Image 1: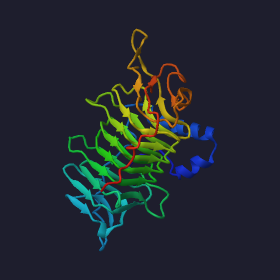
Image 2: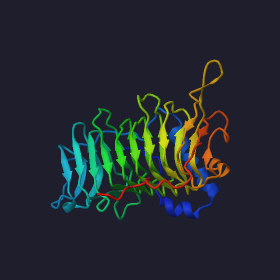
Image 3: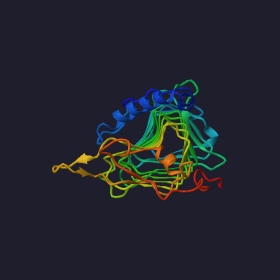
Image 4: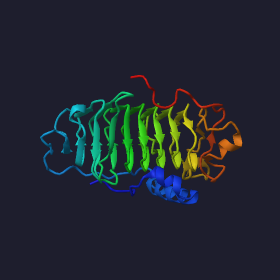
Length: 326
């Protein structure tokens, strides 16, 4: 069973109604626990039980393991996920445009194989909680074999972590990641995160444990707004992160937050403390004082990374966020 880290709430309504200091304190507590050991994943998974796949006569109720390549069709939607759904290695789950998957409380979609969920701007693929559930765990991508998943024109909502990339590097394009505790977790992931709307989450995007990757994740051309924290980067992440051409504005505490301190070498000097390159983003303002106030880095906490944000965009980036063409 997956380890539970967060309680489920409606992040958007809570963020707007609670005091700023309370949001900041509670969010930092969550992030401190999550990043305490960068080698520790956000979830601990066990294999599914021997229970068979549960399929109602309409083909809408599912759970346990997907035994072979499977397609979820819009005509048989919505799919009700009543137990953890496992996509094993060498198996592909394809989800058609216009399909809706509703998850019971505490359930997750765990991908060891491949998830292909490609909708259109008019017909999204939707992953969300079932009507009577408080929330669900989210999508967890764990495949590391080079056969990667793709989500395009999908919506992921009301999860503990909308999509957690644990060593896997899927493409997440033109999606809506809304109202989750953590929207996107990149844990040892070189995922390409582009043209998405990341809105109304406690933490929009969290980047951790990328030191062993051959290439860094790409986070570009996204709209990251109305989260408590827009983007969180662990200070010990060693590789450069492609964080550019995003609209990072309207977040309630910080647009970019550097979590933790850098490693200290045997001679007492800071290691792995290169600046985080966040140039080319729009921060909702053109005044450097106002932009700096949206960034938590070495100016706010010694022994952590500094963020370089100049040059910055002087206006909202029009191509950021989901594109409308089908």
